[in-house]
Length: 552
Image 1 (cartoon, rainbow, N blue to C red):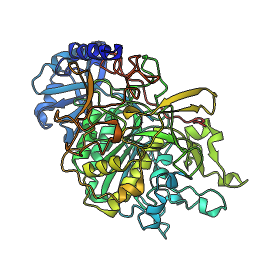
Image 2 (image 1 turned 90 degrees about the horizontal axis):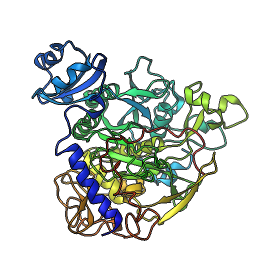
Image 3 (image 1 turned 90 degrees about the vertical axis):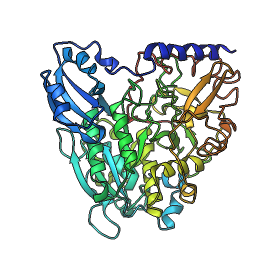
Image 4 (image 1 turned 180 degrees about the vertical axis):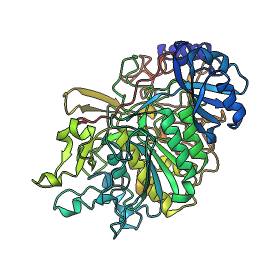
């Protein structure tokens, strides 16, 4: 048995010892809170919200700040000294703090094979995409086809600011999803089109002008999107933000909120995070997927670099794209990867990112008035590529369920990758070795046209599997949400989703790919030998947008 495998077994046992069979009802980052301090917490109950449930908090001197009826949860403020006793109440499922969130197309359409979809008449018409971000500004690029009427059909801010984008992130994300390139059509140069050129945008602002929000703001926006689903045909939700993973997705309120949207028939697409370079925990960036991308239901997206061309053949994985498995639950993430490096999309003039990174402006002529576009890098840019693709799929076949959409995207994703590549940071000049395996590229590189032409139907849940180490056989298998080995004939069948990375029995193979004896990751315990990945008290690192130069 290799050193890595021994460490794997030790840390799995460590997880059980630290976390037990059930997560604690009081989140670990609340257990040492100042007893005299007023704390904003999200409390999940076993029963639907009612005066009785709210009374359990008010009876301890607390107040109700917001109610999330679809989750049987609410946002409350009360003294820290009341939390432990409240967590002992039989009706309370979990108590967690109101945590902070941060925000994590010239060649892109051709790289994704989306140009063929557009020429075949698929442009997202009639599909509503909820963009939970820092706001979306009005723009000619959001006009309806052959009209000056805006496709931003609804706007609401869940922050203390207005609905427009003071940070410069949300309008860029929305442009990737559904910008139609109207402004760039006025110039004989690059054209900046999104993926679903005529999809409707539902602007739900959850990040302020500093790119910061909270769990409760995001949860309220998710609940609003569910409420408005029928009104605006909201079928897709894009979350290009994240935060550290503090607890199992089964009790994390943000994860439970995105699951509610998924169950309501909304495909939820989430950025994986931008911490693939982070070795602060000795994991070589593994175990850095951020919440809610750690939830097995959602589609979690990592980032590739298009290398400035329209061909897929030279594309590589970015070094900053966060890697799985997820902290605590060991869910295999990301699910897919898509272009995310130095992506051109709409600019929010005067916003925080625009002011801090003026060199990222894209000007289509010598006139400053032509600088309507902006380049950003990160998995925040990769996620909307997939959201736009999903809008096209749902335009073609509105009957698709979120599970079938996810299955088709993963099954048809390109799985031809090298063993590793070497990439260079465009600003620092530092080089990074990027390995390609199940925890870095998931099921592969999204292919829009292939996904549109798939006829597969998911008959069960397409929850991303968990990685399970078998102490008897010393093998690591993929296990679905029902505890069934992910292999031949199980849900999606015989390795079709994961390709050659998984055998017929759901066992991850290739001794030098992930933990064997042949690769630079192997033999060091980076995957299975880390307390961070297998459930230490240290949370995963925080997701950040890569707003600077990106990678060469």
